[in-house]
Image (cartoon, rainbow, N blue to C red; front, side):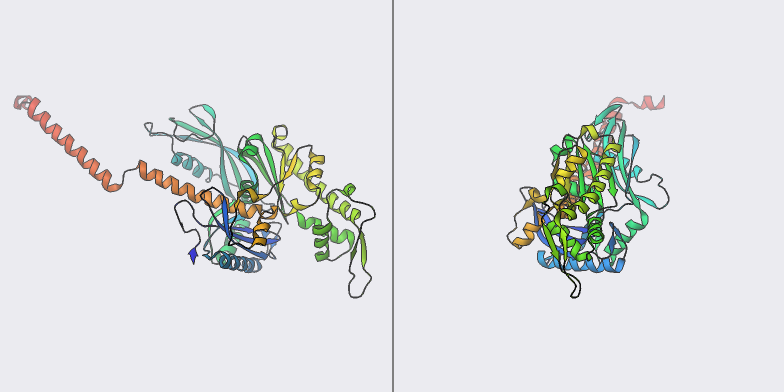
Length: 448
């Protein structure tokens, strides 16, 4: 059995994404192929009973679900899962902008990744409100010696390095509870990643991020929003409504059981009431011999549309408050389980006036013949955008570390080589000094 995150070859480390969602807990095991696609080796799923609106509310239930999904994913992929990339969401997530400055002492060298890491580390030392901690520090634009608008300053010469940062914070207790669940499941966290950032990796193209785009990830408990412009993340927000809010509305509005409401939403749900005919009727079985209940498909759509309009209004408020409303050439991309609702993209376009499409993670997936066909088809669904995004982020991080370490090895001489070089330099200096004393300085010079 292979070890999770063990490198089979230098270019393809095996990585695991763990999506702790409100409706499902999902483990995806995979690696990057030589063609740059993601080859999924195994998938494990379990019902999430211990998570409410993206936040862990019952540790024991969440741990059981994580263990179950890890075992399933491990068996299917034949990988011993030990290290995971975990997603984090929830209403407690906030974001802020901050500026950092670094004055470099070594003027003879170019700006390196280490200088940027020092700037990022300084941001992690910012004083937060009680009960909050920093999850991500994302550099936006850099300024080198008063030259603004630089995206990547590595390799440039400069003394004063400044940067604008997008900082994402979360509640300490929510973060600790996720860590506790992962720890109790006998796993180790490689990275804790904000879920909309992960989803953006799997469903957005670089062109869309450059043009300006809003990612809206409609999950079970929350709707995550991430706004990109000129390839840089500009705004993030988490709205505390999702697919489960729609299910609850159907349950109350149509007076049915919760599991029946969920089935009605999945099979007959529509986000636009006007797209449904008046005479379409669904028959729902009654309880213990009671008469079946008849529900109009159009009335069902009215219930769903009311809640979806509320969620979209929240999203539109975030777009306007970000200040990028007029700069979004790429429009809106909706993903997550809630994006599968019929006629949703039309409703989003109607409410916001922006173009909208559904984001599928399938363009990143490589065909794996060993994976059951039904699982491979399921992975193309927007429901798995976050899980596949976590996988991509994890692979990117490891490959970057491998590349950076190789670069460091090339630039920095090995200790023995450095010592040899220094000894040689010292010997030649000594020889030169002796020669100088012998040839050019007489005893009389010393006596003077």
